[in-house]
Amino acid sequence: MSGMRMAVVTGGSAGIGEEICRQLLDDGWAVVSMARRQPPFTHEHLHSVEVDLSDRAATAAAAEDVAHRFAPDTIIHNAGVILPALLPDVKLEDLDKLVDIHLSTAILLAQACLPAMKAAGFGRIVLLSSRGALGLATRSAYAATKAGMLGMARTWALELAPSGITVNVVAPGPVQTDMFHGVIPVGDPKVEQIAAGIPVKRLGQPADVAHAVRFFASEHAGFVTGQVLYVCGGTSVGSLTL
Image (tube, rainbow, N blue to C red; front, side, top):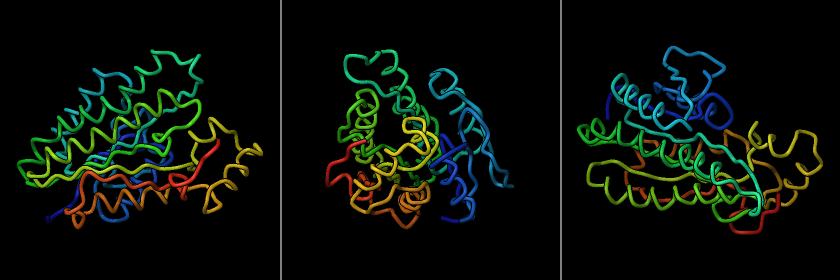
């Protein structure tokens, strides 16, 4: 590989996605954020495409636009929504929304960007799943779609390996972001209770996850594909109660 690397990052306007954008830019990459809002900072190599990723038609059009204008060699699908509910209260329209955000968006982006990746003989796809894919109360729709990422990534890894394209998954545990605090408010005693229940005795930070994403996105990670890395403070090997 030579020249500037180019990544498209979904959900790059806040939380983990924003931190991924910042770290890649610091490493000398060019980055396109795809999110409902622009990132809260500017950089000469940061571009923004505003799109509602739950709108399949709008996402397809945005993906084609990004592929045409930027030809990214790396896709980092970070955007996510929780929509928690116990089983009796699960709404199928919520499931449909999370299928579009978590799964359909990844497919549409990959389909748009694959021709250029294959032509170059190089590509990186990193999907952001969740420790919740292993099961967590109130997460029926979220866990189902985040778990779906695992099977999808393993399938793509097999299909795309001959083209020099790797596909891997980063699965975070509890990370302090606006999305986390949308479920558990800042200052709620439950925040400290959750931290105490994590083997490393703290909540994750966006930087913890971004470091793992950078590893999979690296041109040096070409012999690693179809893998899931839990960045979860040990909660994937123990129990987790939120």
